[in-house]
Length: 79
Image (cartoon, rainbow, N blue to C red; front, side):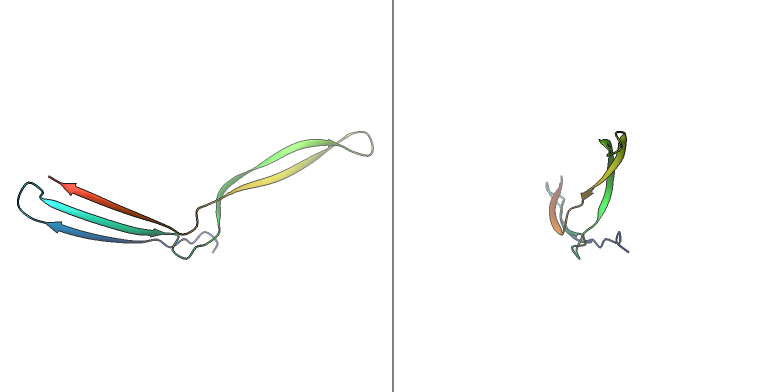
């Protein structure tokens, strides 16, 4: 399936009493298998002159490739 994308996330949480009550670290890998896919696109239609003197409709499809494998990290502080 060309739209089957795998993501993975890891959360580490540390809680303690005091002014900084909690700390949470997150790390994620998006599109972990580095699948090439396009989630959306459009078709540009235009007329070109034909040999018979009329117009011929041309269609050109365009797609937006999505991001390959990428990583994100986060830090959440709880007071």
